[in-house]
Length: 620
Image (cartoon, rainbow, N blue to C red; front, side, top):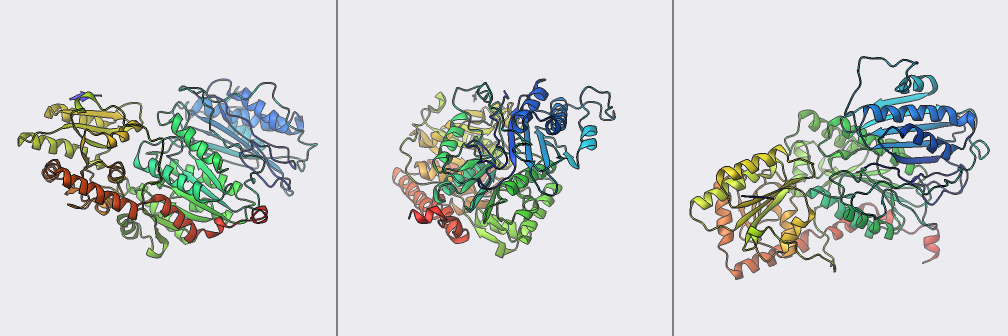
C-alpha cells in the first residue's frame, strides 16, 4: 500500500457626513451623514493593543474627549483576546451618530478560547491589563461577551457627549506608511480580504436593491462537496444579477489556515470584482464541525453585519449557504430582508448530537415563521426536511444541486496520477468521515481480490484540510495495511484529485456512501466523461446514478453488494461504457445545470433584483 501569519488588513473609514471612501467595507448613502467604520485584522502578538489604539486615532482623530475612552476600552478588549483567545483577532469600531444617543460601538472577535488564565480569579483595577470587562462596565451603556471554542466575541457601546460632526471627529490623518497587508506564505498576490468598489459602484446603503450571500466554505477554498457547491452557486448568482447588486459575507479564513487556497481565493475575488460585488469577511473562524454555540455566534455576527449593510436598502434578499447559517432568521428579523436557507446536509444525516439537531430544527422553523424559504438540494432532502425537521412542504423550494456547464477554455490538464495507478485505477474521493463508507470499499476490494478478480490499483482520497490525519483516515490506513491492498491512500485535500476524473487511466469511479444529501462526484464524473460510476442506493445518489442507465448501484453498508457492482463496472465493453457516459451527460445537462437553476430561482422568487433602478433606467 502506498501513502502518499496573521498581520494587518487595510483600515477603512470615512468622516461622518462625507462621501464614503472607496475602500470602505460598510458603504452608506453618500448623500447622508452616517456611521464611520474601521474593520481590521490585528496581529496575534503583544503589539495588538498599541496598534488598536493607532486605528482608533486614525478613525476618530486625536480629540481627547472622544478618543481616550474608546482607545482604553479597545486596547483592553484586544489584549484580552490575545491573552485568552486565539487568532485571528478582528477589530470593528462603528461610530453611530444617532441624534438621541450618539455612541461608538466596539466589537472584538478572536478564534476562540484556546488557553485560559485562572477562571476563578477576578481581575483587579490594579492589574496592568486584562481589566477589559471592569472598564467596559464602568464606561459602556451596553455590552456582551460570547465565548466559544472557535469564536469569542466581545461587544460594547460607549456613549459620546455630543452629536458627531466633522469638528468633533477631525478628518482621519493619512498614514505616512502604506497599509500592511496580511502575510502571505504562498506568494505575493494581493490579499482579497475586502472589496474595493469603484467610484461609480452604488454603496451598500444606496437605493439599489441588494442580494446578500453568507457562506462558510467556498470563498477562500473548498475541501468538500459543500464548498464546491457554494462556490458554484455564488458564481452563478454573480453572473445573473446586474452589476453592483451582490454583497458577499464569507467566513474569514486566514492565510495561515490549511483551508486557505490562494489561487482559489484570487479567482473568486476577480470574478466578484468583475460584477462590482462587495465582499465583507465575517470575523469568525471557519465553523466546519463547530458546536452549536459557535454556529449561533456566527449567525449573530452575520445578522449584525447584514442589518448594518442593508439598513438603507429599499429591498433585500439574504441567502445563507449551508447548515452553519440555519439559525440566521432571528438575527435578521429587524432588517426586513427576505430569507433563503440552503442546507446542504443536516445533523440528522451526519449522526449529529440531539442538541445540534434541535438547534437546526428551531432555526428552520423560525425562518419559515418569518416568511423565509428553505431550499431542497435534492428530492431526498425535500423529504428529509419535511419529515425529519417538520418544515412545511409549502415553505420548501426545489433548488437541485448541480454543476456550471459553460465552457472553461483554460481547464487544466489532469495532474499526474500516483505511479502505481498509471496502468489503470479505481478512484474514490470525499471527506474522511464514516458516512462516506470508504471502509466498505476497502472490504469490497478485498473480497474481489479473494475471488481472483484482476483489479486496477485503488486510489482512495479520504481527505480533510486538517493539519494532521483524522481518526477515520488513520483507521482506513490501518485497515488497508491489514488487508495488504494494492492501494494509495491520500489524507490531505488537494484540488488536483478532481482532475484525475479526466485521466485516460481511470477505470471506475466509486461512491460508497452510507448517507448522502446529494453527492456531486457522479455529476463531476459525467461532466468529465469518466466512468462507469458505481454508487450506493442512498439519499441523493439515487437521483443521479441509475443502475444500468448511468452507472451501477449497490446497497449501502454492504461490501459484498458493492464488490458485485464494481465487478460489473469492470466488465463493461467499450460500447457499453460510451453509452453510460452519454446517458450520464444527458442527465447532467437536463436536470443539473446549476447556472440555469440559479437563474430560474432569481427570476421566479427575486425578480425585483433584476429590475433596473435610477440611472440604470436612464441608460437603457
